[in-house]
Every structure is written in C-alpha cells, then in structure tokens.
Length: 179
Image 1 (cartoon, rainbow, N blue to C red):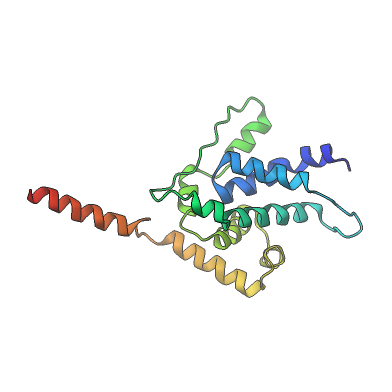
Image 2 (cartoon, rainbow, N blue to C red):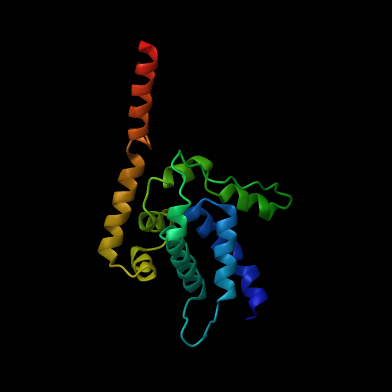
C-alpha cells in the first residue's frame, strides 16, 4: 500500500487521537504528519497497521506532552483547547464533525496527566481493550485498568480545576473590600 493511500485512509483516525490528547489543531496535525514522514512499515512484522499507527501517534503525543519544550511553554492560567472549526459540506464531514469530542470535554481532559489522558481517550473514545492499551503504552493490563479508573475518578470530581488560584482570588477580593 502506498504512502498516499495510507495517509488518506488513516489520517482522520490518527488526527482524532492526537487532537484529543493535545487539544491543539496545529500540534495534532504536526504529530500526524510526523508519524507519516517517519513511517517505515515492514508488512511481515506489522500485523495490525491501524493499531501500529495508533501506537505511534499516542507515543508521539506522550513524548510531546512530557517534553521540556512543552513545559517551558506552559501557560499558568486556565487552559482552553483550540476549537476545531469545520463547516460540513458532505455527509461524511457531518459524521466526522458530530463524532468529535466536545469543547468542554477537552477542558476536562486537561485535569489528567499525559498517560492518564492516553489511557482514557483510547478506552473511552476508541473502545480499545485494556490489553491493547497496555501493549501500546508498554504497561501491564492491570496498571492500565487502574490508570483508567483513576482518570474517571478525577473527571467525576466536582472540585474546581485551579482551587489554589480561586482561594487567592477570594483573599484578594476580601482585601480590596476592606480598603
């Protein structure tokens, strides 16, 4: 299968993984393009090409999220994902648009660590088995189950995202009120 055919077949799937993990359109596009630029597939060793590409994309996203560059560029305020703007012209575009993760859900995903986000997205959005997720992330199946349950607990928690900032804001409001 040629690289053009592979790109046309798997780019939307890989982009959806990368966008859900990173929350940035440009970063997701860069990751997917990088995967295809460095793709060197030996058909004898790769049994499931889709799973192989998903693993490559997930690992590149984890590397990006854990990179020193990403930590240096970290914004300390409330994080909001970059919205995707698509105007569906074709029925297929409508299906893809309807399938995308909502903006609020991406904000919630920011509460998770990169590994928790990877496990949660692969399990919830793409219905991968824990065994497949464990193979992709090079962890045990039991560990992936625990990471997933921890991530679900974090997302169900009703505490504010930046509770330390809200306490500081409350204190500043009291000081300004006293003046």
